[in-house]
Image 1 (tube, one colour):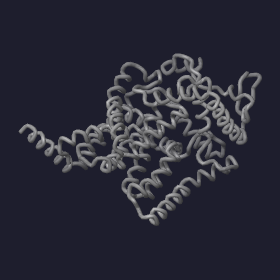
Image 2 (image 1 turned 90 degrees about the horizontal axis):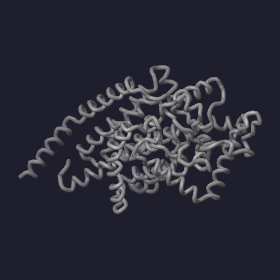
Image 3 (image 1 turned 120 degrees about the vertical axis):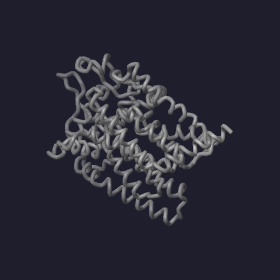
Image 4 (image 1 turned 180 degrees about the vertical axis):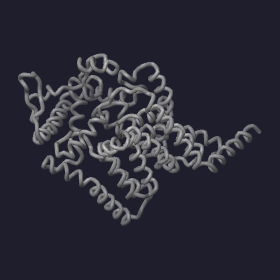
Length: 431
């Protein structure tokens, strides 16, 4: 009798959610927006240089002045426009709220149970890390919106829009390039099992969209470097930073006495994960006798030579020191999945507790789901699994931080709660 009463209560809750889902979704998004605005106005944050760097990149471009070799173009343009209208933090809050709506649509393809969908939406709407990144000038919130939208259109069998948003996301961060290519084939051939001729035509159409979206950036890079550069010159730089004898942490930080003096809340001790002095004698660098340090050779040729030198040095270090490479890769793995922030300003007791109580349970549930997935493949969750472990793998090779984990944290939450709800659903009938 008690079991039947519980089942009736579940039916009542489900009926209420189904009947009022649009209104409830709008209400949750609205409350999330208000809370994020509150934290934006009343939560003191340390100063981050990212926003100013993005603005300067666009201003230099408009003036015809060469700018950073390691920045992708789309988010700086958004920052520049946003700062002219209001500020990028307000826009990031809007992007974060729009991601809630997109995620709600995506959940129908993972586990189409109304309680599951609203539980996930409630979690990500008020998830502390989502709130934090939405009130910064970082590009992660904007990137997550495009990643989520890309996956949604893949699941909806709209491969052209999926490729469009996935290609635009490359202009924010190109880290998902290989999963994007894989998904084009995966959804056409395996997930939806399209006929061969249709699959070929669709794949060719996706290639055309990718080329169309990326072409302006490729042309810009060719004019700048006089050679084809698909994304930017950051990949070999981060490979060097993450693989050199000075790196003991798996991160990519240099903290000196000047930083400690000017930013005491952020830094308390010196740290040097890399130094350009290691590249003395390599093309693209010269030694300044007066400053007694290695400096960059200016110009495009210098930038291209440095790009090659980073790769040459990193490859040599990895091949000559495989044990150190494996040790660093493990440290990066631990750092990527770390339960609380590494940075000093976010390493206090309150932040550790917030992180443990918010991220920790979903990580545990996700680990349980991973074992379940290994024992029984599920094609509808495989894209999320792939994205999560691909991001983890990439940052085991390059440099690692929980910031780099953020783009896949919503997926971790989804799969963790999916595991919990599917186990509950075996004993309870859910609609």
